[in-house]
Amino acid sequence: MNNKTKNQKTHQDTQTSKQLCSVLEKPMFFIQFIIAIATLLTLGVIAYQMVIQSRAWVTVKKAEYDEVQIGKKPTATLLFINSGNSPALNLTVHSNIKIGEPTVPSKFPALQQGQEPSSGVIGPDSEFFNYFTAGDVITAKQFKDINQGITRIIVFGRVEYDDIFTFHHTTEFCLINHVGSNTFDICTKKNTIN
Image 1: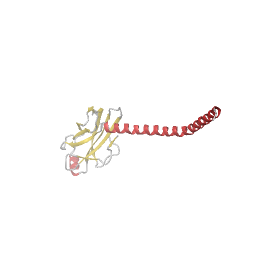
Image 2: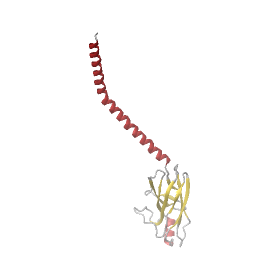
Image 3: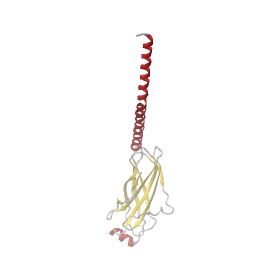
Image 4: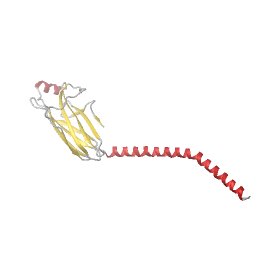
């Protein structure tokens, strides 16, 4: 084979290689694009799981009220817990007590005048108490109705806090007194966490 024929053959091989590369280039780009998207989605899921596992989770652990007495304001004690793995920052508790019907109202009244919310920081796996008192004293009729389950003591409120990732969270709670004891049961609604 002479030099001219060799050069033509080499040129043809080069052209064929270029065409083959051109044909394969588009699918390869598409495959790489799909792999890049899948990688980004996977990283997003991993980051989300890290946040969920590491963030603060503040909830009511236990709630009790003092013995109900005629002429006295009912007082409740709530024990909150941060069951998360990081501190709850800028934590504020807003709470109230309502004496009334044994059903949970669709809309709760606002905090009583002059009642200041608690605020602070709670570390991971830590607990704190919140004490608060109703605005009105218990009447003789309310005392009788509470003991018979006709009227109930309802404790409700919300806890607001930030996590270490600067996301803002709210826990709403509603508890209704358990007839015959000084403990509370969870209301059938108005208990949320985000």
